[in-house]
Image (cartoon, rainbow, N blue to C red):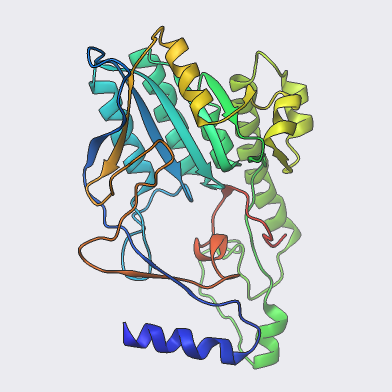
Length: 329
């Protein structure tokens, strides 16, 4: 801890720097049901499950020193399983606040959601919060209805793989890359050398395949409002506000979390129900539907966020359904 504080004090002296944010990390655990709001009548035993999807969608445990969070894919499955097994849960509201993540993680979560709906028959309503873009929007396509706040940033239908050519920098500092490889294209994407035309064609082909998959998911989820050709026209990677998305047919309604909950009640043919959430053992008390699930764990861990250095740069090479403001192109 003293070393972290010292580093935080010295870094601004190095030049242009916006600061270091120290936040307590979250320690994972099994999901537990927590009542968010009670029903109007004490004789009502029905429930609406509020399931949160937050942050980057990656199939990896992100907890540990200088990091926080659970495995988003695993936690999402646990919460869906809890809602599926509880016969009193009649519907689900999926609260999405995510810029997306890896292609595979986004698709796994989407498939889990579609399977949940098919196997349980329980309606699912998405409520898009600050950001439900790229992989976050991909996941929303697995819901029966999609709500977005007026100020939601959504869309970003597309795929990206961020690669860099650092060959000139390496030549400048006298570093030469000499890989031992089994084939000419084994080190495709190597930042120590320029990309060849053949390699670019290969990677672009993969990107195109994943993009087509994204388009199919959106066309399937929005078939009542958009045809496949219109989806393709809207899928140039740009983001939209919630109001724009509603006008274009990318979401069903502009509203708030309360509106999504009322929609879930109607779809489940209910007049009243308790709202419950599934949090990990480390999560805090929820006083309202807008409460966060995080709390200070018994074992203190610290996450350091350096502005400008977080985001996709820390995920490593790969294909992403991801939107991030200022992402290198």
